[in-house]
Length: 256
Length: 329
Image 1 (cartoon, chains in turn purple, orange):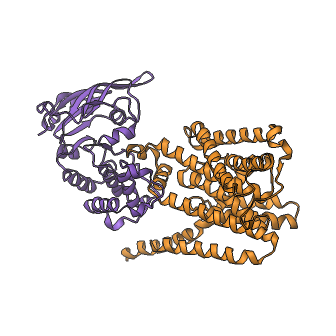
Image 2 (cartoon, rainbow over the protein chains, first blue to last red):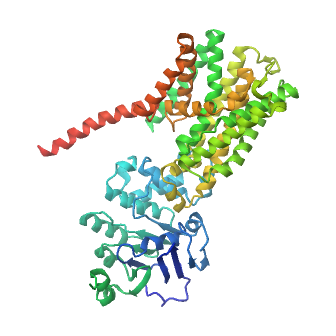
Image 3 (cartoon, rainbow over the protein chains, first blue to last red):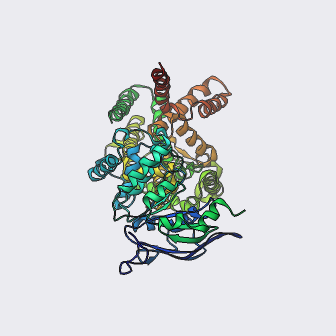
């Protein structure tokens, strides 16, 4: 089990210190502090508009933080651009599918693998001459059982397949930490069970930070859950504890 | 994969046909084809931005202009580039094109979509303004007349046929280089940026840098096109850097099919051919071209190169209906 502070001898993969973001007068994220150790599976839940996706955008550097710090492997990366954070071993998926719609499944994965290799700047050699990249793409697609559809353009895939490909792209850079923004969004219950199975099979050393509304997915996957409400962490604990928490039930059901 | 090598064979066959047929035609056709070849290098360079990176530039004529003016000024004022040093001028044209793009790119690449279009338009007009007003250097509205073409070794480029072969050769090299570029990891990254820039950033790409490099490369090929254009046309004037020239290049790329490279070449040949043909027939020939452009954008947004794909999809669409019906019965 990944208790948050027990393994303090190791450096946390990701650490947030009082991270905040305001858009004008709106405080979307307020003083969020937590740490994620290697292999941790942590979920962030909370009602719509609680600031979950904004928090992800702060961690990945899409928005600049108003105050507070983001530490990756003990290094302060708060002001860094997204692509430099990715280079340190962070990957994410998007709540709204962000794939390359008019490229094939294979091309999508190839681009994802190339992202962290210096050869992404090579312009005098065909992409198809990089055997190792193709082999790796082959492995990734096999793992996610996408091989038969590798030449299909992504825009022709079903929504469920696109959600799964989102995760494959995230995994392509061999991340140490994977941020999943509602991987099961818009999936049927059958598809979301499949998705959970796929996620639980991932490398146990990989740390996962997950935003999800589907509580079945959250309880199956997460070792620790934080509840975000109006940009603040209301409560953090093991799944059982969160399930029975009075406060959590209040914010979800309303106190009237 | 198979359809790919088929396409390559088609292109090689078409090029071979041009190489064999054109020398047997009259000097009028030879000159026309030479002009179209020189200009199509500019159109392909624009296609790297428009079709592969998703950046619609309205200032591409600036790079043709800097290449052409460099050639003309060096030849008429300093007598440089009329012998073996012609190759040096080609190099200079490429370098100046790249350098101009490196400066303009700093201003333009930060924007995207219609804002990128407007900034490149404004920058292109700056170059036009310079060409038009800087009389002592550019000859102002009159432009610069090139009195002769280069002559080196036993080769005299004043001969239309010889000059055609030279331009054809350079065109083929440019096509090969750009084709390699768009199929390289760097070229694929441009396609990724066109499709979804945010995802590319999250995957670890510094997308600004990739776009900036692509912009400079396009400028370099634009400069090359300008050097050839100057010697083909024999005169360099502000018309070459006008907005109309940029728009023409853009429309040729779209007409042939953006994101295909050779589509731009086909578009260039059609427009050059129509222009020459129609202008001898009717005085209102520009309207015909206008209709062609509008019709392309309305009914054929993927251009002429997109026609086979469209036909295939229509056929596949028919199949899909059949498949959908089948399980019901």
